[in-house]
Length: 350
Image (tube, rainbow, N blue to C red):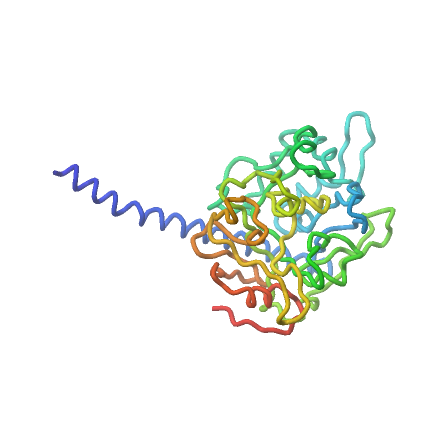
């Protein structure tokens, strides 16, 4: 009888304990985004501009060498207490090859493979780039592709190795649905999300760059702008960067440190995929928890942008540095208004 009572009590207490643990993880996730917000603001104050989504890339989708350039996740390292990793980005040496210095490096698989296992662990162990509910903490998390696997399963020009994380810059796109081209200078007129590419001062020397935008780019106001959010990765999709189907590839769990080609997008995700007018646009609703949708796909084009494993909400960094938990049933009109920098629509968040 006593054992039965104890069993009942444990059964009653267990959900409460699990809820308390999830509440703590959710708060930790929110703190991660706040730390990123401090990094973005400190970068802006020091560099006199917003961190670019990435440095120089060409306008040619297949120019993978030029597209393997550092993203804003790398560029804000010094402003989020990761100066040692930033310093490591400035040089590497493969065998007897000379040291390559600065952001003229191509941060593709050759660069990644030149790192020691300890150095890879360092890049893969930035704890605040991952959500504790989804990936937890502790050991490093990164992706090491093999050429054979990529060629057979992906049919892509290149899948980049590198650290995996749970957050992405919020992308909004005008006029057509090719949002994955956000890393190309030729598409600047279509990019109306939080970050855009850097200004390239010398196309033969990508390290010669400057910030394109200040916070005035967020024309609707810093308190009315999504900057970074929790990217959706369905249950079973963590670490899976090789989904089948061309469109699904763009929502894979790709490394975030460098740009890939148009089928391996790491640093950003879309909320608004195409905007023509206030009544004519395509937006992606937030995913609910771990859901795979559309017949069990773990990379779903209709719900592949943002979403968390926290029940019922996804956390977003707002331009003023605050973090808000956005309910997953939130309508796409509200999401669109918060994603676009200049649509003139204000949203009162709870």
